[in-house]
Length: 402
Image 1 (cartoon, one colour):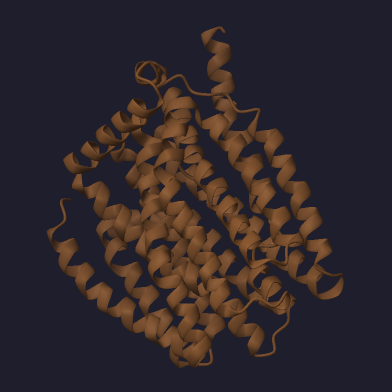
Image 2 (tube, rainbow, N blue to C red; image 1 turned 135 degrees about the vertical axis):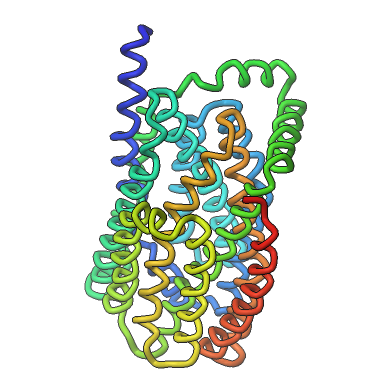
């Protein structure tokens, strides 16, 4: 392949990625799966166990799938991820069995694993290949806009379909769109940036290659402790935001809100997150990375207190959407600048692993407390935990390598 033709195809990865993300993020089940499974007779404790299993699987499979992306190609990893995720949607819709639903959640986790680090690594290294990695923050903001736009469409359309037409009009279109994303994933061009290192590791054999890739990736983090700090900080914040996202659905449903209203509340947070993602670069110029690291977690904690203590949960949840958008763009741009291309998908898988560990520890516990004492009391306790962690976090951040 001629160099000019290759570079053109690499450049086209950016546009193809926008289409791929649009299809991937239009998931009509996004804001409804907990309500759907509740209607099927599953308890809050069972839902917490399913979500806990999801994150346990993600935790165990993050590094192997990240290594697959680094050793065998980010494109292949994305295609496999979407195929596996589509299978999980079939199980979610059709199965009434708790063990089978657990299997479906595990498959969903593996699907996300295969996509998580691979997608970001594919785009960042595509930009490096054409000498434009400096615009990654802008592209990350657009990606977040697409994510939130897909969320808004999913939440509003999904809520309308579930409330007025029935849940078959949520799942069948969702599966169709997911299948379309597989086709788009197959059209990406793999960057050649890491071919030499891929070839070296493949000659070792599968097991030795995985071991060597893990060893070198861990060494990169040891040599650059700032990577570990950013990973642990970002994913702790995302754990709190994700827990609120899911349990507030059930909380609002218990207050008598219907699926369309709930979809609208979640869509509001998505709008704020999309706007924040586009503004993240300007915010960072004003207050710097350290300002973002210190201020936005505090804003999140105040919002959790508002949800736990007041009747204005919709407003305070909207604020968490703004926090999410700024942190997603600013921190991912900063993190990618610290990671070498040959280890990118693997180290980004460590990031997802940290998120899964947090969710394994906290998500089922929130469900159990919510079932026993009410979800608003669970949110109150979540605020207490977040406040204590922030105090510890301030101490650690003051000593982190800048």
